[in-house]
Length: 158
Image (tube, rainbow, N blue to C red; front, top):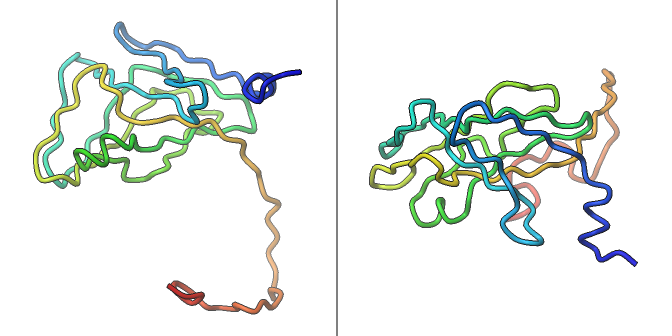
């Protein structure tokens, strides 16, 4: 009988990474049950990138990737960077589509009070591979009624 982890690996999609420049780190899972792989910075010039407080920088990884159709890559913040330094992903989760073949880059915003320096090879975000459901889109004149109706933000309580 398979362990839960072996069963998950048996039905897992294959993700292929292409290293675009020397020093780029192919991501991997940091623990047995980690949901995400860590993405590391891989700047073109090999220099650190400074993110001043309140600003956003696009950080290259030095990698391109290929996902199987029916899956996406979700780029999410690393909790340590967010909690310790206020550095996070502004569009979290960012989506990498299965048909994208360009360099993977991570937008980072510094919500902290001090400049943050992203060193080459620093783990900057997580990549979670997730299945995608594609909806059938139907235009209509009326929608079915619900108890909530048109109640918006906060309408179900705080």
